[in-house]
Length: 470
Image 1 (cartoon, rainbow, N blue to C red):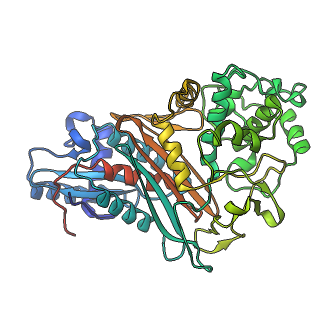
Image 2 (tube, helix red, strand yellow):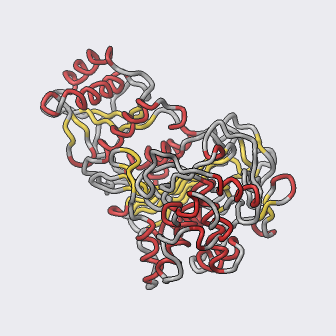
Image 3 (cartoon, helix red, strand yellow):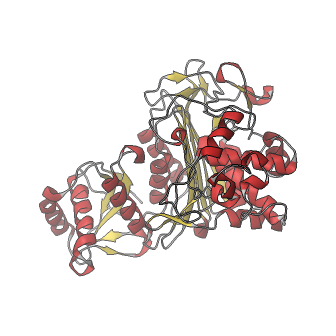
């Protein structure tokens, strides 16, 4: 199998215009057809005619909105869509169209190519990581589960100045990927009959009982981003103000749910809501959150390199000595260092609000559990399945579960990304094909959904495709 990536190839840009035209022009006038194995093709036309058609259509393309990997056989052109820029920098129309095309691609019947060897997978991963970041300046660790085997790939520097390379056991800040651990812990408590997703958060945090709208918000709504709670610190332009616990409680008691928000049904991102979950879990079990997480989830799963360090001096996490030396240096989107290795940021300053760190090896184990490797523990299997249950639509073909996003097509994908100004992360699974990916990068300002989906697309690309030469 040979596939050549051609970014912004005129035919690919034209194909985008053609596909958008299909949306508005109707299926009867659309020359593209969704074939088996993930192929978007113009059937019954020689490749030369296809290109003539596409180049003529190129004048109607929207340059830069989408990036494509493109390959052509004698009778059809194959297109694999890849978003061109981070979602938070993409306009609303672009985001909607990009989401549609990604869903359109995943709606095809996809299959992991049996021709993919470990070497093929390594080549795909290396090419996409090198496209995403400069591995001479920053680093990345990747874990891939395929056909029951786990593969690890490492690139670049854990610390450029110290000349420490990234390893499978390097510790990265997970950012929002940590939320899938939070919801697994919550769902374990639910499956054990110790809590309910319908419990109001005020049941466990009595300081909120005398508040207004916040006292009715449930644990399940917090876990699925459907509570309506959202603070200025949850979105750009990232105000500098921070919260102590008393200040946070005062804010929450005054908070009013948006008038047009449908609780439990409408998605609205909130990091603050997950910190409320931390406190509710602490209060329920009478154990500090970091210890509760370790005792109830990390230790049973043998995730020995996953930790929630407390915040120390100079915004540096306090790690066990065996973990501290494995923490990576974080870098900006311009590859400049931020803080020290193990840097811990955040707007919320009380114990249990710190950021989780983990390794590619541990995330690989967690992927294995997600894909069914939970042994004979029915409560754990039930908890994992519960976290995958969807409750709200984010956009067409994309639903929100407990922290996870679920993308529907012929094959369902489940994933979560995370990012700060000095770290980027992604974890995702295609349960029907027993595929899983974890990506950890010690550089900020990067949309790891793009990297993850690009790798997905190449793992399911059809075989024996003749590459187009530019």
